[in-house]
Amino acid sequence: MPVREHEGVAIWRRRTAGEALVRWFGWLVGLAIFLFCWKQISDATTWFFVWDAPTIAGDIWSRATPPRWEYISRLWWPIWDTLNIATLGTLIALFLAVPVAFMAARNTTPSRWLIRPIALFIIVSTRSINSLIWALLLIAIIGPGVFAGVISIAIRSIGFCAKLLYEAIEEIDHAQVEAITATGASRWQVMAYGIVPQVMPAFAGIAVFRWDINIRESTVLGLVGAGGIGLQLQASLNVLAWPQVSLILLVILAAVVISEWVSAKVRGAII
Image (cartoon, rainbow, N blue to C red):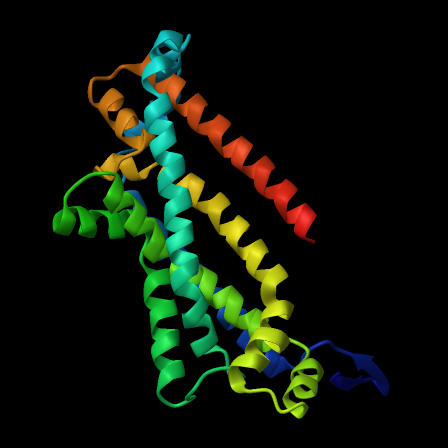
């Protein structure tokens, strides 16, 4: 820490004058950027609607309560579609993510200079695009419906599952792998008996965790025509049927809470 002399007495300072100047300059630049961004947001915002938002929210709340409970008979099939979209999408993603993860892990990839970059590109590209955008693209290609929702969830999940799995593969105990290799086992035998058993708990946890996330994501895919309960939500919003909207939101909330409870129990059993 810098020390300076003042009338023959050493005075401790946390930073030198130059370091303090740089720090204050950084704060000044950050404040200027914040004010500039706030100005851009403020110019693009209709503040009348912002100040009137509590009144509008209260009006919508009064229209949405009580929920239209008799409408629930028309929601069982859409919520079943939503669960199927999440489950099938997760299963497809796991099936595709496993080989991608093994190709991306440094200790299992066939080639660090060719195969691994391709695997990492697949992981990054599938994770970087939201499932709603995938759904919009797939609806334009294969048409609206549940199938587009399943594929969009699957593509979105590949990168997530493969990334966590390949990190788990790289963190395995190499002593066990070396012991199996010393017995003269082949590459596939080493993978089957030395690597796979070590990553299976992580794989199961990743699968359940991703399924839980996909339940949430699949509830809104219907807003763009990819099936599920989101389709009913969009239809109710279009006709301003607020009692139906409130009931659909309650059903979505219940589905998410149940999926969270199930995933927590399963992860607890695995761990």
